[in-house]
Image (cartoon, rainbow, N blue to C red; front, side, top):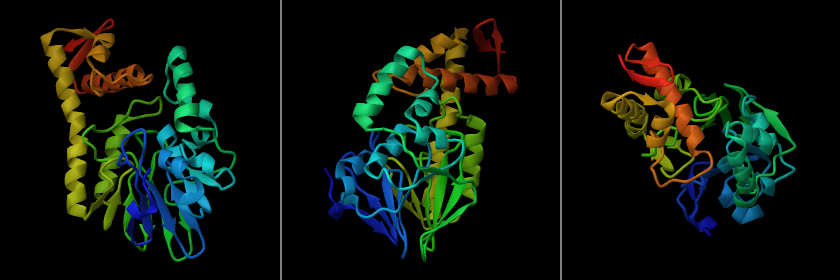
Length: 299
């Protein structure tokens, strides 16, 4: 287990370290301290491990309703949790979280157990809805909600002032690339969120996984462009498959655009299908591919 000595401060923002370095299923949680209120952002498995050892917490902010961002929320059952209206149901109720994946019943049953035993997800009674541009005053320090949909419909970042720290959640700048495989995910909305981030000035840019914190706008923009570029590479992979011969969606799912072949998680087939369908729809609108029955090929 990591310790408070390993945590890193950026002004009034503390990044809670973890042995996994924020790699899923863990994540990077933040403590943001004002003169009157301390906020916990995205309570992860690491928060669950430390328990109340993370320090006093007056409220939680959840960037979006995925299991790795609420895994430690049960440690603070009596504090209010803030989330965007589109994702608040998933923070309140594990069943709503599960429904967001759109998995078949057998996979849902398997992942329901993993939510309970692996992540400690229990839901949260006091969830309050916050929208784009709303400001949470901590006393001498503020959190401004920045709605960044696409990953999920309610995915949000947070701008911490006066520190100039922008938390970008699961626009996490990893080599894995963007995730847009939920029922509410939207690739076009995600790319619009990338564009929005390019226009926000900050000193530090914090991610929910692995990368941690990037300092300076130039370094962030370089990392964001590389992250966004994974979408184009998935297009290229898909077009390469269709150049060989027409394919059904099931064949594209089996080949995989997102996950490596060895990854075996209950939600992988559903994520692969949702991702493939979004790419095919965009390429069809662009006049690059077409469908004949359930088979897709190049025009």
